[in-house]
Amino acid sequence: MINNEILKILYENKDDYVSGENLASVFSISRAAISKRIEKLRLKGVNIHSVPNRGYKIISMPDFLIEESVTIGVPESQAIGNTIEVFDEIDSTNEQAKKIAKNASDGTIVAANVQTKGKGRRGREFESKKGGMYFSIILKPDVAIEEVPFITQMTACSIYKALSQMGVDTLIKWPNDIILNDKKLCGILCEMSCEIDYLSYVVAGIGINLKKVDFEEEVEKVATSLEQEGYELDNLGLFWNILKNFDYFYQKYIMHDYDEMLDILRANSYILNKDIEILTSNEIKKARSKDIDEKGFLVVEYENGDIEHINYGEVSVRKKR
Ligand code: BTN
Image 1 (tube, rainbow, N blue to C red):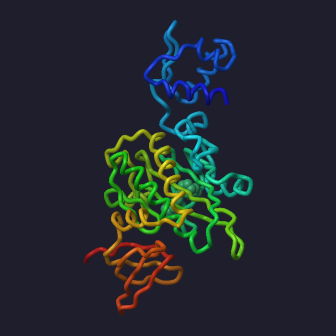
Image 2 (cartoon, protein in one colour):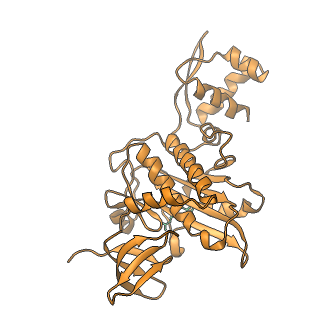
Image 3 (cartoon, rainbow, N blue to C red):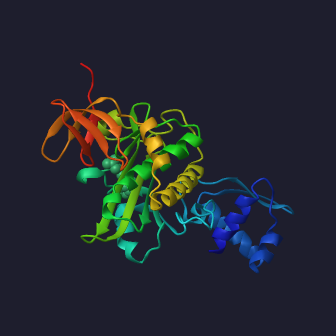
């Protein structure tokens, strides 16, 4: 915990040197003990410069997530990210989140730099090598079961807005992908645990491709990363920004105030007003996507003129022949 606090002080004063003496007095430990803790932070990838008689200064934070750094940019008043568990490698952050969900508070996060069994929708694998950011947010909103599917839309809005604020223009592919330059940059997988009429919790899992990695051949064709598209963002800053926007939209969601989110979903949709194919568990249907309704359902018109508001299935845009 002291190491987290030391890093926080250095980060908050990142334009200056903070003296060892100062740090030692804050934590009531010796300067030698501070020096040992600084060494530990360096081993974790934090680049800290030290100058005799001046102290310590952060040169750079690691561009992957470490337990000591993740909470620094999360305001205490914010529900989302109040507790964050960080793993360098784990099977799946969604699975770990489900294991701890019962006793976890609303907004607790499980994050990892690598997933060995990253889960995608419909039982598919989500390639999660080093070079991405993978995290799951545990949510315990007091809402009706019918309102739960909107959490995927809310998650998409948070990621969209965070990226947009950092200069990256993406589109949202209903219901759960973020698209950059026609390729998938980020996937969302929301899972829930409920009784017939009572929601226990939702886990909102987010996987973002940050750097160029060697994807499997099939994935390579459809996926991209921020690096591949020429963006060099501060990854930790992006993580905090997503949490900040998530917290903002989550408060609105709880109040059933979907308007701003619906505006974002409609104005930045990858699939609206396009000819699409809807893949359900047993068939593929051709349709035209018309709108996103008040509940976040996709309004589609089939070739026979029937209209349906769908909340399931996988959508792909039909290529013009
Ligand atoms: C999809 O594209 O089908 C959804 C992908 C969701 C991936 C994220 S990464 C963090 C969380 N943990 C998982 O195992 N999956 C989600």
